[in-house]
Image (cartoon, rainbow, N blue to C red; front, side, top):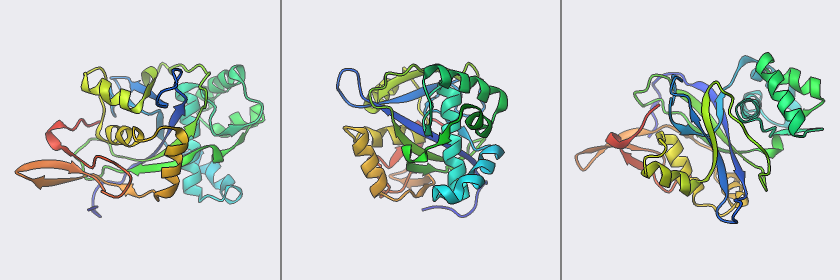
Length: 260
């Protein structure tokens, strides 16, 4: 169902960050509301993340052999780690002497350097990419949208989640913890807006009673690139995705789809 033609995607990466719910209910994930001034997904609730930068590729090349990853995959995981620190202040996918104060200092340095390698060197940290698990890859190249990202999604876990997060005051206006179903319910009430990939990912995440369940499914289902495609059925246009990639909902009326 995927077309071989279409635009070249902008490489991007994001981490879906889990924490245990304070009330003991369904696990929560961290979401952000993007600034309305952003050219992509402005005003939408999404998972923290962003594009893969040249410095991410350089560091990916340097660690590829030792990490057991391809240089390209390493670069995407590094970008996910960097963007998480930049946008939320959380030091995920990293190891060393890390506490809240050092994470805040590292975030400030990252804002200046725009690269993770000098931050790692300055703080004596190292990458620990085993903390994150590949979950999905979305590339909506068949859709009529201005900017097309080829985004890899990863999972990570904060456990108790007793960590402060704060917006970057640049790309985002709000950070909040919510269960996957809670986010879907908020969208139905009109409290947040969701683009098609985020909605589908939340529906998939709502299946899981714990981070461990989500990781187990992610490890059991090989990541395949999802390229939504418009299909005519019953006289109406539907935006559809692969039926065997772990998603409980695989189609939405095109007229209802929110785009970036």
